[in-house]
Length: 119
Image (cartoon, rainbow, N blue to C red; front, side, top):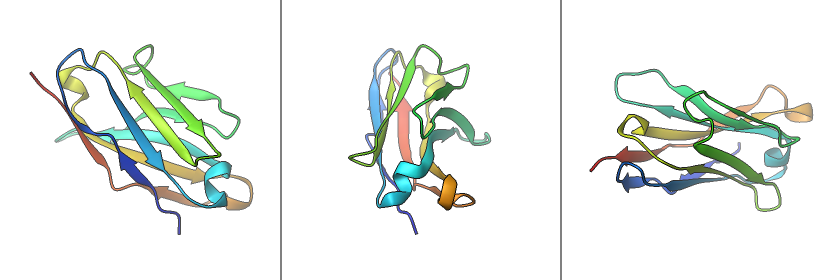
């Protein structure tokens, strides 16, 4: 069982920045596609950004040019730097790990961290 622990959420004013971090454990992390999702009240969970094992990245249109995802396999962490935040970015943000290679078929979610953008 892989445990993912998110941190860094909180309250920020519009236009501000926030860095989320997700910590994994074990060998699973290095073989995982890591992603950040978010779920706003009354809405479906949606993909925000993803970083593959080879560090290729993908961003949702809403995150392009504003958010940056990065991974550090040695420390088993994946960060999401969010800039120029808007009220519409308010949501619970979840970290997800999807296994590849010998870990294919396994996927885990973190417990989520609340991000609130408000003046």
